[in-house]
Length: 477
Image (cartoon, rainbow, N blue to C red; front, side):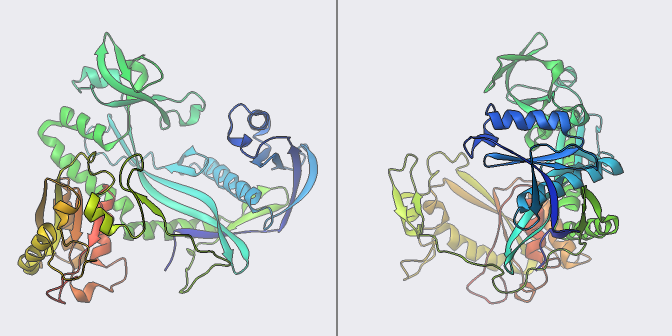
């Protein structure tokens, strides 16, 4: 198994810098007005171009990036193994500086280093309104212990960044209903990322003379022209239906396919390998005085067995089944859920649950029989059987509706057949999905396994997926 983790190495084990010490609590770096926190902000403001600063406990490490940069604090020698947190901060700063200078991506974040493909808008309609961009995150993390020593690497993530290009006043003028939608404001701290990084403002209760009246907010009202809709799927749908009318469904379907092209498992593997090879060719990257950073292009290989050092066992957890803790039981919890229902039995809003079943055409009948038992109760002499009461009664639901989406043999490939069925299922916005596959496909590699490819598509849209094994036959899983 390979992780989305690119190993890194430094060209030297030691580097020099300075240390500032404070009499303070270890929490002070995270307390906004503590002396250590204020000093850290001052140092980054005045010396951010020449030094990297990293706070830990009651000290700030001050590492010069260039020859001739002044020593700040008491001189100290650092080691990449014993001071790996400082070394990782240097590596993160090196990646940030590298991408800032290459100009190949728009850099919108430092921790993690966040890259936006701002020249690739996934919106197929009204790109002047919808900004839907592929996004990469690169964070430097330790993988430890690894054969006795700390091993660091670059953890790579792939996602989609939603934002609105037009402000709320412009959308309101085009007829977008704003009541009930959440809005954000442009951050004031960094001009370079203003178009992309925005902070929460509140929920629009009503619009009055060019002003949004807000709830759940630190301010009671805010000018429409100075705020934007929050970049969420809910807001994209609300604005899309208002602006596109009958064309929204085609827009939404195209967006599902484009999102999968970014976040689908096999596509992530391809991008990870491409990014790794490119970073390896660009290595070594400047890091600080006397040390450079080399990134390995091959993702970390996680071998069989336990690649770790010492460990300890946690006690079985207590599980709370009622808000406030009036019903608290020890693990395992399944039998207690049968008696009392789950934690959100009373507050869960969707009492009529929609389940999408992705199933080969020839197994629809057998799958239907099995799922009726799941819904109504599976007869078993074993008191520990999970669904003796049935799915509906167990979780205190009003109903559980199954919709079947057939995987047809006429498709060009197995992967394409499951993709088509999954995209059809997503149109109906199910609460969860069940994927049924042939037994011989169970052990296929992840990239071609129909369960994992289906799961990647559904979970990219926030729909959880479960593999189901049917007892009456060994032909399906």
